[in-house]
Length: 303
Image 1 (cartoon, rainbow, N blue to C red):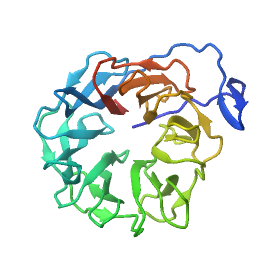
Image 2: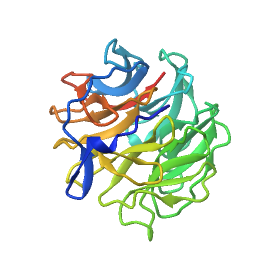
Image 3: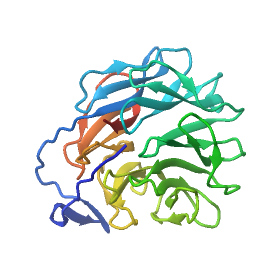
Image 4: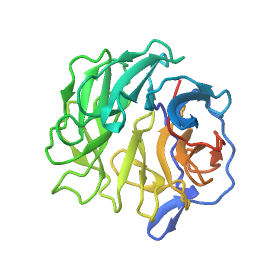
């Protein structure tokens, strides 16, 4: 979830191989509040949802069940978490559920024979976008927060549309798609919140995943592998000024903005296993927040 982005000054960028990247100037260390929810495999390899403060302190286990639970997203008011959970023995059985912020009061929101995953809240907290495979490919659906009125808004047969994220004003949804005839691999698209007027805004080399709007709606962070491995990038909401923020040999993915827009959390395997990192919104001061010997990823930063 996001609120307000920090714009990268032109003076802080350099040109490298035709791509704008952050200059190696000394950056002030920032801290940001809020709560980060994430997936962890530290409990005997089972996927559970944890929370921690924005500085990495107070890690708390929120779920404890035999089912794998993942893809958490905090509600805009910080009172609830939606997530995906396997109802059977594999990912194909995943459904969307909701709990209170402390992990209690589980409610199942979807119930069908195919996988539902990647839930995302609208800013008013009344609707949830998610990915469903019930039509034979990945489509983006929208439902009310109680699970009612589940509606396919992409309806593009033969293509996979995934990773939805609402614009702060609720009028747009950013997502990734490999839709045939438009792009040879995943690109970042933006559409109206009813699924109309989809536009490819990244037109980028490589493969795109996990876009998220900045809190003020001016930027979109996402991951791309144009450098040979996945890095976290940021661009203007119209697709211009695409900038590599992490620029690391490890795999960096799943960016999420801090509530005040000054920082971005992301997952990286640069330490040998996936951990949740944070950095300033200009890519400086990349810091390991979880620092365990286990697997931690899928962060979502809210209030």
